[in-house]
Length: 442
Image 1 (tube, rainbow, N blue to C red):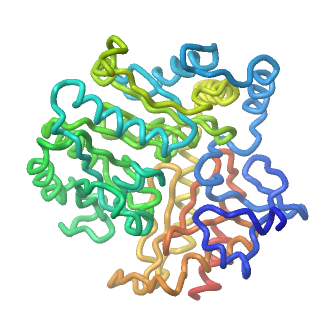
Image 2: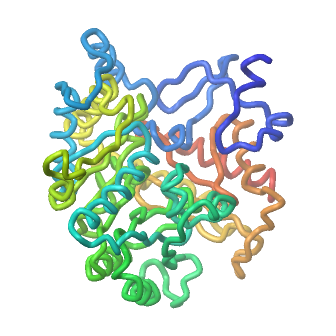
């Protein structure tokens, strides 16, 4: 069997590839992907939300090349190196105040696994072993490994595997499009938070942590909630005595309009997970940032069994750390977050203009450099489209045919392009999206 037939693609029903062969990407530059025949595609999703600065950014590539000439990889247990230490120092300058330590892994799921284990260990090592459960949010998604699935509130990903895990506590997440309090986004003060408050008060004594994606539930259909809701969750978690865990893997590094989404709610977590844009999408790397009390709970003589016995072979890989260090320098020197704001506003405006008044667009919503279009059966009732019709998938295929890698999550079409996208490319992308929807829905 050749490689094409043997390769099992992630998050893909492989039978689909019989009708829709995968794009064979040969190279990439800036906002574009190029297939083996030279056709260009606008990467509207930053290749799974990772290529924040654009593909093959010259400064990132140069940093990797320079590092490769001296050190590629060394075990990080009882060893250290300059890129890892420089990266920790750089991260602590930009993450919310109060976080003081960092552990490295290779992907977001692993960063979340570490956060869950650290929260569990914190209470076990401080004489409160009854705190062993976690609260998560409906539609929340934190990765595909076993621990992450246990705190996944999205049945599309987790329902099939739920019998493998000890049940955790699911909190009702916000749905601002279908607000139970009848509020608009502009007038929202998180009036829907009452049921969450009640559940945290009920389960507080058994909780080790509360985990959430701040401001945007990306894999959960790009549901977006206001900073007021996030602030209430942080306060309620603390009142319940649980550690507050932020999953900023997709929302961090400027994607929501600030360096990290936590800034907009003025909250500091006890544990924070970052990844994806950490290396600007060039190499796999993630990190879990930790507040001092959690670190101190795991500190002591080795015989105390407090050491955090968790590792990955490529933890703190020197090449990846060098790329991440350069990424942070670019953010600072080029003022990336500030420079993004007019670009993000243009993206939101272009998409809204194309879909204004469409009878099957329930909402166009935006947070920072993320814009999403939710397709529905009827705009007035907001009744969902039948999932069996795979409307969003068909729209994504129509967009690819027109030269844009525009993916769907169910019947939500989303835009998370690299930050280097130009005004002309933004308008072109919005046109392609509207044409693709017209082809499928009219």
